[in-house]
Image (cartoon, rainbow over all chains, first blue to last red; front, top):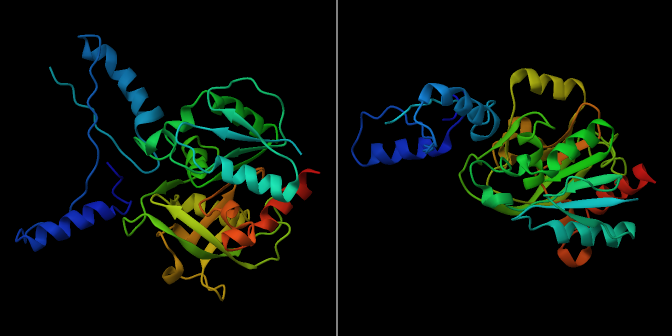
Length: 73
Length: 229
């Protein structure tokens, strides 16, 4: 996701479109990216650090983006 | 003058800039594949425009992790001159060789047109042949050219005279109306603190001969030639 302070023109366009379709109570929209990673391990604790490193080094640009990690079974 | 042009999968301005340099400076640059780790010394290394890795993930993000980049980073610290144009600029910010980041244009469109630039600092290796505040007509062609940086970084860029080119109108008026992509302070090109790494979104190689519709980019290459020789 783009950080809150960063202008998100795609989010704004989606918001306007939703409003014009009758969803008047939509106040703002922020959009982002979902990346699914399939790991060769079953221990999510062990991999958490690794995934954080992937996020910091490659998957996000820390200046403009923030991220959340969620483990699925 | 020994010049290398790095070729990433998806680069598409590598030949254009090679042609411009050969035409203006008389010496044909070498192409280096992005997987190289050892290569001879060069006075100038160019990261050309294009769509490295199809712009996947973020523009320049995957290219910034190409095997060649470690060595380029090292050489830039030792003073080798580095230029990144368009996608090259995006690779330089992603690899943290230049501060800030390039985001999607404010109007969400791919903008391909000629714009005006003001030369804000003519004391660099790419701008010394221009007059200070000279207005030049140069093409842009990008979807992600909205330069963004933190307030602190912006202050540093200003205080250290690192802003080289700003978008303006034909009178040199630097206003938001003449800002094609929503860049902070109309920034189109910056250098690092040391002054040996330049990144810019506009394409001087596309306006360096009459046949292409303009010659305002010639002084860009003459500046480089003079700085190195």
